[in-house]
Image (cartoon, rainbow, N blue to C red; front, side):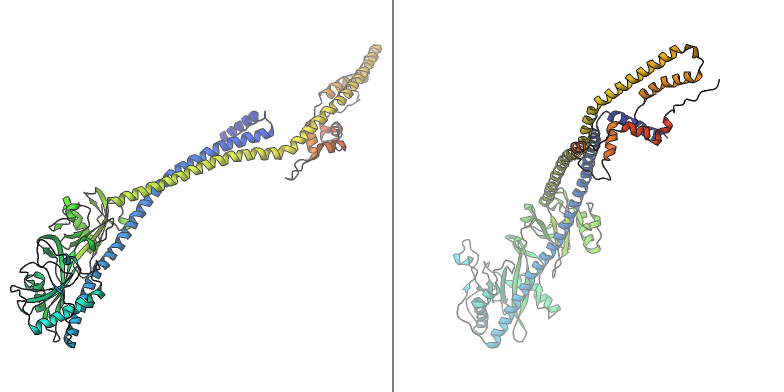
Length: 561
C-alpha cells in the first residue's frame, strides 16, 4: 500500500511538473533524465568491472608467464642434455673411427710417409707462431725421450699418424666447438711411448701419460671387464696451472689380434663455450652437489679455481634446504616451493643473491652421473613485469577510448532523439498550428452570433418581464410562474455549458492522427480550402445520445397546488 501511494505521489508530481511543458519538451526531458542516470551508471560499472578485470588479467598473465617459463626451461634442459650428450657420442665415434683406421692400416700394410707431422712443442715462455695453427703433431713420451726409432713399431705408428694428418681430420670437422677439445693416442709398448695430438698443445717436460689417472683407471677397469674398451673418467683438474676441469674418454688401441697396444683418448674440457650464452642460469653438478660448470652471473663461480658446493649461499645464493628440495623433487616428485604455483607443478626456490623466487628445472645428463640445473635470473623477472605493465597500459588506453566513444555516442544519441522527435511531431504541430488559425478566424463569427443571440434573448426577456408586470393580477398563475422560472435558468445553463473536449482535440480526432502507427503528412491548407473540416461541435453535442442524461429537460408541466 505504501508502495502504491509513493508511486502515485511520484506520478502526480511528475504530471504537475511536466504538465507545464509541451509534449515534445516532455519527451526530451524524460529522455535526458534517463540518459543522465544511465550513462554515468554504465561508466561507473565499466570502471569498477575494469579494475577487477585488470587484477584478474595481471594475475593470469603472470601465472601464464611463469608456466611458459617452466615449459621453456624444460625444453631448454632437454636440448642442452642432447647437445652435451652429442659431444660424448661424437667423441666415441671419432675414437672408433681412428681405431678402425688403425686396423685398416695394419691389415692392408699401408705405409704412409708423405706429409710428415711436426714434433709437438714443449712448454716454453715464448711459443712459436705455428703452435697456434690447428694441426696434428707427434711426440715420444716417457722418461727416456730420444729420437731413436724402432723400424717395425714406429713405422706403423707413424703411418697411422700420417693417414690421420692427411685427410681424415678434414672429414671429421674437429674444429667444431662442440666436438672434443683435444684428441690423441699414445702407445703402451714400452717406457718410450709414441703418440700424436690434435690440435697441438704444449707438452710439459717429463710428461708421462702412464702416470695420469685416466690411463691407470682404464687398465684397471679392463682387468674387471675385458670388453670395456671405451670408458669415461670422472671429472678431474686439467692441469695444476689452469683453473679448469675436464673428463677424458679413452678407447683401447687394438691390433688385429685384439690386443691392447695403446689408448686413443679425447679430453672433454669443461669450458663455458659448451653452454650457450642465454639469459638462463645453467649449472652442472654431480650427485653430491659439487658445482662443476656454470654460466652463473656471479664472477666468483665462473672464475673459481676450486670446486664449490651448490648450497654455498654466499656464492650461489642457495642453501642446503634448497638442494634437498631439488633432489626430493627429482627423485620423489615432491614439490616444496617458496612460490604459490604448486598446482602448476613448478619448483620455485628463494635465491638470496637475486632476492627473488626463481623457477628451477633439473634433469639428469645422459651417460654421466651429473645433474643439469637451470633457472631464470632477475633480468627475466623484470622483463616479465615490464611486459605485464605494458599490456596493462594498453588495456587502460583502450578503456579510455571506450569511455570517450561512449560519451560521444551518448551525445550523438541525444541529438538524434531531438531530430527524430522534431520530425515525428512536425505533422502534428502543423495540424495544431493550422487549427489554431482556423479557430481564431471563426472566433469573430461565433462572437457575433453569440451577441445576436444575447440581444434576442434580452429582448425576449424584456417582453416577458413587461408581460409579467401587466399581469400582476394573475400572480397566482402557477404555469406562468413556472415558465418564468424555467426561462430564467435556461440562459444561465446555456452560458454555463462547457465542452468536454477541446476544439483543437476535436479537430485532431476528425483527422485521426496517428492512425494505426502510420504517420501521414497532411496538407492542412488544402484540406481547409476544400471545406473538409466542419465546425459543428455544438450540433454534435446536442445530437449526441450520450449527453442526454447530462441535460436537464425543459418541461411546461404545471404543479398542482
